[in-house]
Image 1 (spheres, one colour):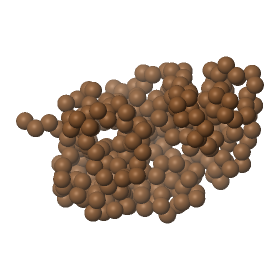
Image 2 (image 1 turned 120 degrees about the vertical axis):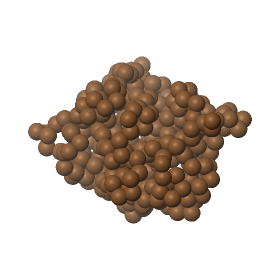
Image 3 (image 1 turned 90 degrees about the vertical axis):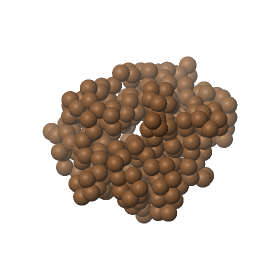
Image 4 (image 1 turned 45 degrees about the vertical axis):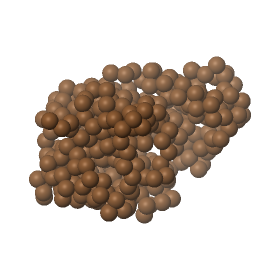
Length: 339
């Protein structure tokens, strides 16, 4: 019997690369990763030998904004499982590039699902939306349950509302096994430096290597976040598609450690040998016009369905994130901006 085949869109991202490693280790599935021709391969170090050897992992080129490339990918290797993770995923960037964000995230999801409807209609599909769909939530609605009203606070969040609804539409209209998730803050090694906790860790690593003055530039430190580890997140995604997958289902997924962005910063600074020198400076360019400032999930629905719960403590996640940046800065030196 041929091995099952999993398609990961956005395999070169933080989540996609960790998911590929998880699937290769814990299943006998073949893994196909969709990426753009210009995508950096830095995050694929853990599986690059498997790819080069022509083993269970391989890469295909495509773009969510190019219908034909998506169709060719799915037709050439119809998947049994799909993890649609690829997106323009940076909320702050979406204010500068709203049309690109909408096209990539909403129409890109339509292109993926329509190709699957044509060439692999029996696939079990995970569409990754975002906790940002809930946006500005009144405190009395915490923790946020699945039925909380959407109040998106950025073009990115609006695009993820579209992503969420498109996924559910294809399940209802075409009988496809599509499930959507609203993952709350998840981080760890390989997190992009446009996200708050990762830019903090990067700036601290640059300070430790003497590349910049001992000042960490920040945006809004008052936002409340519930933090999960990316390695717990990919385990959740595996359970989503293997534990009684339910067409049209939608779930909130997230950690259990809630704190402000400022407390995350304080913890990261406390891990640095130069902590006594480090100052904090508000950078107006890092402030969003509107912020989703209360992001605390109710994950009971997903727990009851799969039994998943986070296992990696906040402290390990933060230390591993900082060590990731320390290693990159030590090797690559001053090629980084302090964004």
